[in-house]
Length: 251
Image (tube, rainbow, N blue to C red; front, side, top):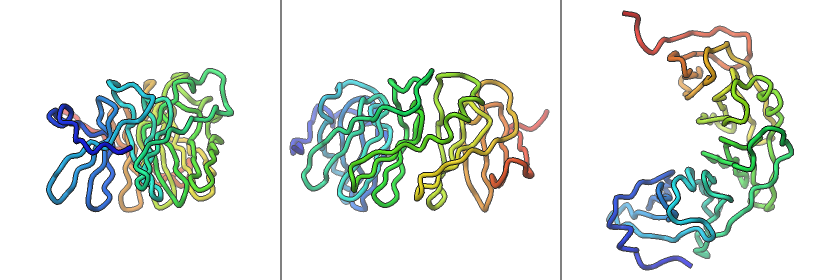
């Protein structure tokens, strides 16, 4: 049940939001350092403690790094949490949704499943993995999961550090997710309508860490490499023109 008491012992502390949802009138967010959902009314900046997710430790950092709405519910991507969390805005209560066992096992650390983001189209919520072999989709209308993992085998062959994370960020263009790989010279493109994905190989980068960021502007993608350069390209094919920008000018 929703907590009417604002929880002064918590509200008197400095709050660190982790993932924020704006419903138009209020901001909703999970606290970064412990298990608590808050909302802030824009009109008067009143902060309320909504509640805590059941059966999760309280003093744990990074439980849910991302929050996204779907219908009349909020969904929370599990970072250090064990399961996906759902908050019903009408019933004002939490529900936990177990993460399904993946099809692909091997050396992958799926037991430590971690997701850092989520995107919604229609009734489908796509959870973006750090450590999980596939982009996990939850169909909230049918209460079923499916996993977009066609890309995993190819990325595993290319990966410079086995058992490590897959992605750290992405961009969304309409109903496509474009995810740069942290430990592979590649980008994964997912169609959120069909659930079909494919891999685009990129130019070779040095070191085990490959891409740490991505941005999109005026028809071009900008891939931020861990080595200190930015690659500008269309991402329409593997063999295409690429412009390389160094972060720091030569002295």
